[in-house]
Image (cartoon, rainbow, N blue to C red; front, top):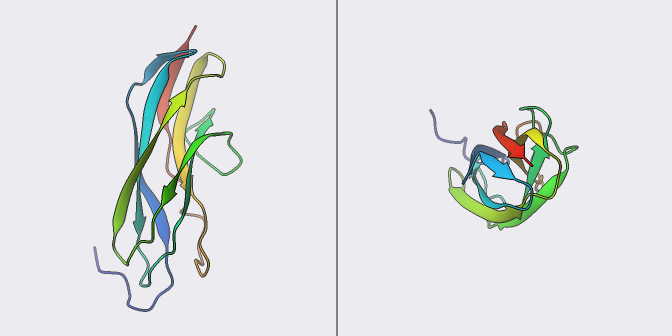
Length: 124
């Protein structure tokens, strides 16, 4: 993988998402973590990462938020891991958990700002 092109705009991506438990019951609390990377060529100012749940593996900004955290300024090529605790307050069945980092000024591509989802099972 090559280094970011010097001077290109910031480009934030969510590289990975992890959850502390993939089998949960309503009322359980779990931790969701995500790695955000600036793969652009200039500093990305601080922003927010929003953790979301979905009915499928495709996480989008239209999926309901379940928590958030602050992403600090990221230099080109720099990554940051953030996490939050979430209490299950939604229905049973399978859900997918992921994250989307909010667009920063100058970022030309928002299509890569969300992660894929991790499947979790919610039981009664």
